[in-house]
Amino acid sequence: MSYPSAKALLLRAFQHVEEWEASWGSFEHHSSLGVDPDRLYAAMDEYLERLEGNYPFHHPRYAGQMLKPPHPVALAAYTAAQRINPNNHALDGGPPTSQMEQEVVADLADMLGLPDETLGHLTGGGTVANLEALWVARELHPEQSIAVSEDAHYTHGRMSEVLELEAVAIPTDARGRITLDALESVLENHEIGTVVLTAGTTGLGSVDPIDEAQSLCEAHDTRVHVDAAYGGFFRLMAHEETPTFDEFPAAHFRAISECDSVAIDPHKHGLQPYGCGCILFRDPTVGRFYQHDSPYTYFTSDELHLGEISLECSRAGAAAGALWCTLKALPLKPNDGVGAILSACLRAARTWADQINTSDALTLLAPPETDIVGYFPAPDAPTLSAVDAASQDLFHSAMNAAEDPVFVSLYRLPAETLTTLHPSLEADQDEAAVLRSVLMKPEDETYANTLVERLDALTRANGTVSSN
Ligand SMILES: *Cc1c(COP(=O)(O)O)cnc(C)c1O
Image (cartoon, rainbow, N blue to C red; front, top):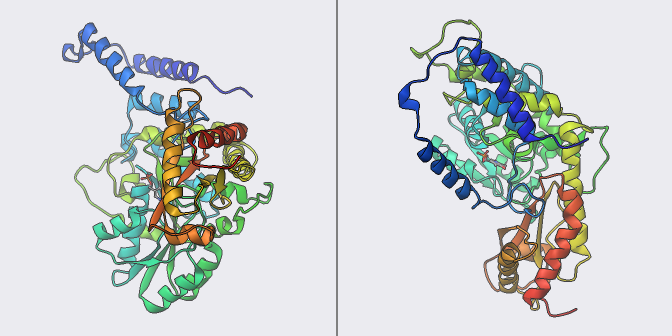
């Protein structure tokens, strides 16, 4: 099947919306909205040129941070609705996209195995989705603390401060996953209302042992929030019908179905442009905390407005529309649509890791659990300062290579993590940078070998490895 043309889809979408607009009768736009053509095109030209300052996020040679363009169907669907600009704050602000939001929220809950009565809505992103989860955690247990893993996204610590909620840190293993002993000790020694687990850490894509952690929390009568902002869509890979992948923590993804709330970001692995997160609550009665009585309330429906179950007010109806249209075209199936894309990403990470293992110049940090790989140039002297310097060198030289550049990212790790994973390394400093590649584009599967070979050659050219 061929990759759809964004231009053709956009044109079709725009033509359709223009016809719909015209069906309401023609009118003259106000002269104040007019722009001098010279100024208009000069502004556009300068803008488009400045956009060229971006890194090539769309290209397989960009294997760095969590970044990629939306799928053409999402782009066209978003643009079509954006021209109308519905606001999903209230049903009247955009009846069709509000309805679509309810449908996609139900699809996401279903994918994660949550019950039919799950309450949820889209958000501006994972930050707000998690904030709402922590806020509900506080409203339910105002006298208790939350517990968050040391490798959880930094937003949890920051939002706990915003909410004036004490956050107890749960230590992690060298791969960035909470340790059950540490969790148990935190549960025994603190008054914890809710534990935050991560399904796919932002650092290395690691997955907390959600199934065992969930049982421990249940035994202590503690709620569980899963931050699946990055990894939530990998639930499709834990389906009985999907092939099994080495190191893939399927049981942990299945256990999400038992948790109290989940944050998931369609703007990460759901092919959407930024501005699309989602929060889901198993217990729909938490909707009571959101209650407000604003004089702006719209009047055409007695149904619960999305604005009545959300902390944000105005939200792009286009975000809901784009996700709805995308999931119609690329469904949440294990072997089709989004699932086929995610399996390619898992294969990309495994191929990348295998290829690193065949290189004398590069060392794999640890086998990837999802689609993020950590690695570093094998230095002459096995010290952290040498790893750090060689990683920085490769990061810069790969990005700035005159021919065939490769874009990766840097990731700082504490000495203890590095020496636990690689005992031969000498800890001559407290931390060191390694390289990190988020392989969230399915094309990465095809290009992984070539790109790692290129990194291998660049490492040798840098002279940071002596042998061969
Ligand atoms: C990205 C991410 C967040 C923050 O979400 P935004 O969409 O960037 O606001 C929170 N948690 C995890 C695990 C993430 O990967």
